[in-house]
Length: 445
Image 1: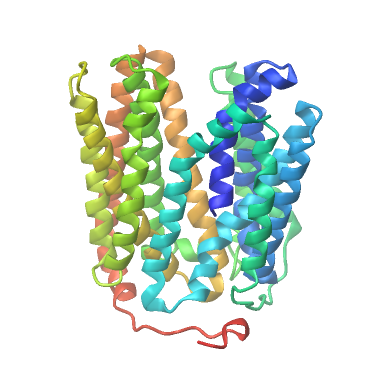
Image 2: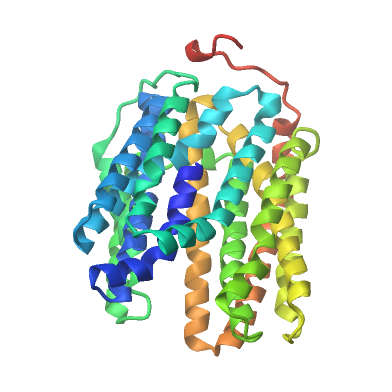
């Protein structure tokens, strides 16, 4: 997981450098990011389905191998087109890691330790997110941008070797449906195209949205009657699972919009340079890392819906404070305290919510649950980014940043409400008896 998160953070930072090195405009170089994100969003649910049919560990290891091989291809890329293909392949491998990682954690630990395991996973993600910009800047300062991708290879080898200690598991009996997977790719892919066309001609946005809607309708008609559909309609009928997914989308929308808005607020209204703004934002991921482990342990003892509501409420309070605080020189420490509150709230929300989501799904549907969880996260992050793009496009920077912080606070508050509404549905999962799951690859249990 650290490998995938570090790659995303360092690659985003390197876009201007890569554009200059390859002799292309910055807008063209953004394909380094968009190709990866497009592959990720298109492949999350299919990778979850592949994990259920072929075995989670097998697909997970294959995903890490594809990711590493594609990284080697990116390091050798002689042109932007070659690099875009490599990033697309990296996104496919990263989708397997993101959709099946927590599903494999569920198979690796007893039920009463799932919250703690998810907390350590969240800690890893938070620390990798915080470290990625600095590591990327360090590499770019001392070496060519290609070393960003070369550096992934030894970590990937270690990850593949370590993955063989994971439970082997067995594949399911259901058959893969290539047509449904194709419809899923078209539906999500066209949404990405529409998002990239925002700000351009109306037809450039509406045409892919219409095509995406048609593909989604066909996908629903084909998959809804199935016992184990590609899009997990069976799981979304469960109130606890549906509530956790909805809360995740709202909270990640608030987190994404808030982080972007706060960055513009610090550099616009407060006049900080990028380095000083980055230092002011650092307490956020560090607080997420600190809260995640504590939240994982607390989720084993306390009702997760209430923990999630308190966490999302903390995020909303921190964002609202950032939005209403008068911008003045010397207020950096107060804003850092607000950013830390945002991080504590988000960390307290994320781990219990993921635990609730996975325990609300049957064990044989863990791959689908992982795909849904990763899709919810990416959907929220994309929605937050698009909201900020719209606000900053129609309002002055400072006004748009404050409006974005207020919108982010409202989204986080919606996550708190969604968490409270599923409190009754979660109760059965929170107090279910602890059962250790034994698999052929985990016989020592």
